[in-house]
Amino acid sequence: MKHITHTQIILASQSPRRKYLLEQAGITFSVIPSHVDEMQQTGETPRQYVERLSRDKALDVARHHENAWIIGADTIVVVDDTLLEKPTSMDHARKMLQQLSNRTHTVFTGFTVCGPNESAIITRHVTTQVEFKSLSPAEIEWYISTQEPFDKAGAYAIQGLGTFLVKGIHGSYTNVVGLPVCEVIEVLIQENVIRSFNH
Image 1 (cartoon, rainbow, N blue to C red):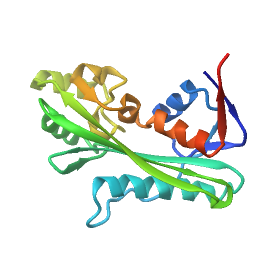
Image 2 (image 1 turned 90 degrees about the vertical axis):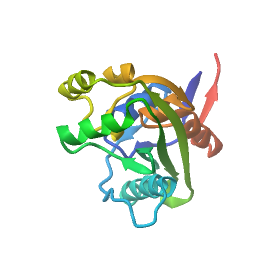
Image 3 (image 1 turned 30 degrees about the vertical axis):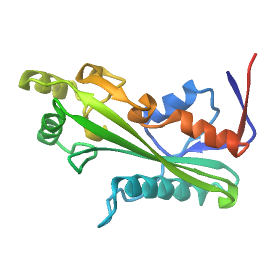
């Protein structure tokens, strides 16, 4: 499957994982990170939170690039109604991994596709259920020592060394990595930003 891009696409994220996923999907784009405050508002559900942040990120970049299509996204991990974002210290990462051990949690990613001059703003979210194995203290300490948990929602990377933590998933794998590629591509095709063809 090949994709032809009709116009400029910008990914409003500095995440190397989102960049990699879009590249693997055959999308031509540039990267311009957004600069917005990533704080949950009082009373916001996880769905509302990731959708609002993805929209804020896309609009932040759109204001300076009026002729481009912008993709914004935000990913969080939720277990027991507790929101787990990126760990701020080794102890924070340790507590997160202990909380996820031998449990099933939910990964929420909100994404927004914003058209030129905000002509179209499509915001959606995708959820995936992820089941962790039972983690021993030694496994947790080793994983933290690799530094991989940092800068990752929920303190793990399913596509990296953290693959050993995961017994199974139900839903989109790329959503757990950081961008639900299937759903994003569907919106880009629907809005005629790209078109697909087969050789």
